[in-house]
Length: 347
Image (cartoon, rainbow, N blue to C red):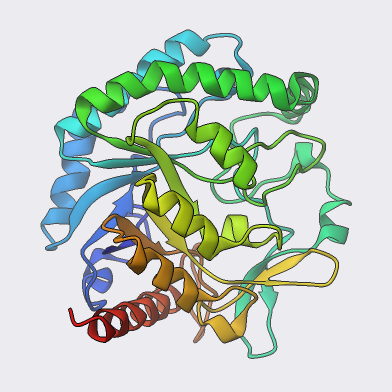
């Protein structure tokens, strides 16, 4: 297991100097954020990012993420051009030593929350998804970190309408087309492609979502028979629904060698199915992080792992979910679990 940390580049308030001080931190996970979705990433920008990271004694082997253009997901417009651009990005990243690419196929919206700074009883702030609040939202006027903000309100309404017409099976068809186009390039370049689950793993605003549960993960992996075609298994995304048994999924897909990247975080599931993101410690949420790490250990996981979203604690401000302190605590907590497992098994 290689412990990594999400870093949003030079503008990130969490500096590489701070990240390198976290015990057993091997590298960062980042991307080129200045290039519009669907365009080819300049090679000099990739080299510059890698050099910046390596100058601080860290590795850059995982990119999160190379976004998939909405035209590809909808199978319309310039989708063929965007697929060719995606292939070229895989080649350019592989040329600079990137070994794993995380991506998602979530229509329109990336991870969705109803509030980014919900106060918790201990005085920290966190990301939450309250169903009652989400039901009142106008999706055409929303903005959250990670979303493409280039669409106007009218364009967003049209986009949402197009996905409603497309439906789940239409989305599956376009995902299959995308996978069959990019995977030969990824195999040739020896780059592992890990799809990120939908967050949350259910339809929002009437828009289809398909990377949501074990049945759909099986269907996804069956699209292309090669170990480079795999998962970025996020415990918080899948785990915010009680029907997903995360340790079981880790055992199943880890044994198959199809988990390339692990996002580990905890969530507290509420009675109505809403959820609050909690501290990583198992006692703070509804998920058993010890059992998750035990599952990764038992399948011999040698991929990349990172502490996912964290609360804002100790007065820290910054990018919601991506402060330094709580994620660093999470990394140390997981490193402690891993060391215990190694010593219990004589390693």
